[in-house]
Image (cartoon, rainbow, N blue to C red; front, top):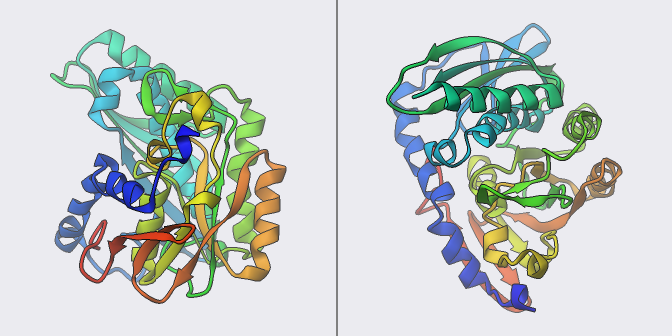
Length: 328
């Protein structure tokens, strides 16, 4: 099949040059400028949300801006994604999303209407209200940024930076979806689902946090599954080996896309996690019960690099000792 015609080297090359990965490299210098120690802040940069201690509760604070290219292509989908990526950031931390605020800059009323319609539909689907924000109704450009507040018990928070050597690497994704008609690199597994299904899937991470079944986790975001895993490993100070043939996929030949494209796609509903081997079956079962594919795709190793394998063939995509993704 055409979708099998990939090698670890071809996947590594396509992921490394992908904008969703390359654009993360500027984060490190920004962090050096902005970082301030605070006793109430348990974790910040490198996590999907900052963790702020409030008694025995963790306040989870995150923000995401939508790429202007998506705004230009499909303002409705950009508005929907502005909510989608934020609720996933809170879910990835094992939290419950509480409320959001936004900053919307729009060049005309039609764009503003499409963006806000997308935000409304996503907020309703995930049952997380937008409670305020700021509007620039006559801007010379179109931008949507959203910030979200979530909560979790402090002891149940799932971090990106706590993977352990020997852990299994688990990928969970909803394969029941479509290539988004406006954005080829987006796998839309959300807009055609009921709120009940979406909220059940999103709630799996909270359940895993409460049962302490994961050692680390992130939602799969714009860098795709391999890029997102690289960020988790980099933050944890470890490396990983991934068997590319174990990555869950839909019928790529039927969809007309390559494997290299699939691993770079934003998946809508997807998470990358690490867990000790005794917890793997429980983790995978909880996702499968929610209608998602979930399986082990690799192992965390001591050597600080990410290696991709396919049979006897292998290629190193990131060497974190000499090159980072975020460089935090």
